[in-house]
Each structure stands twice: as C-alpha cells, then as structure tokens.
Amino acid sequence: MSRITFDDPMEVVVWRPPAEGGPPGLVRLEKRGRSVTGWAEIEIRPLAGGGTEVHWREDLRLRGLPRALDPVVAAAGRFLFGRAVARLLAP
Image 1 (cartoon, rainbow, N blue to C red):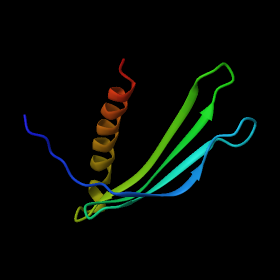
Image 2 (image 1 turned 120 degrees about the horizontal axis):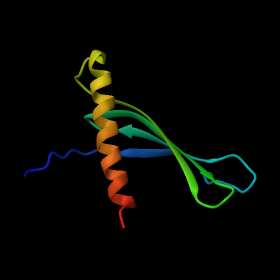
Image 3 (image 1 turned 180 degrees about the horizontal axis):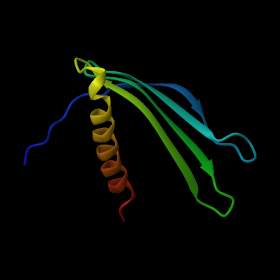
Image 4 (image 1 turned 90 degrees about the horizontal axis):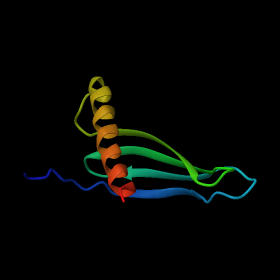
C-alpha cells in the first residue's frame, strides 16, 4: 500500500510550559505550508493524582479547497491525528 505524504511546516509562536499551581502549559503552532495553513494549540494540564490532561485545538485549511469542505477536512484531520496519537501511546 502506498502512502500519501506532504510537507506540513509549522512555527512555534507560543511556548509556555506548565507550572505547578500556575496556568496550564500551552504550545501554539502556526502552519506555514504550501498546502496546509492554519494553527494548532496544545494545552497541557498536570492532574492532581498524577498524569496529564491534554487538549488539542486546531483550525486548518487546505489551499484551493472551498470553505464548504471545512467539515470534511476537520473530520479527516481528527481521524489522522487520532491514529498518530494512538501510535505514540501504544506500548
């Protein structure tokens, strides 16, 4: 099976590590690609009983596609990101 790939260059524009008793950590990425634009924010919160809670928010656009297809692009992004995270967390 062949894979579809593309470049997705990003720039870190906010970097705030989590601090105990302070606000959650935050990373904001600006997508600067030829095909993919938009942003992603990752919020990291330490949990009182140990572990970490992560919230991912993303707004991405594929150049050349009309906004009417945004729901399809969003669904595909959730699917692909979910697979990538599952692979990272697999034992």
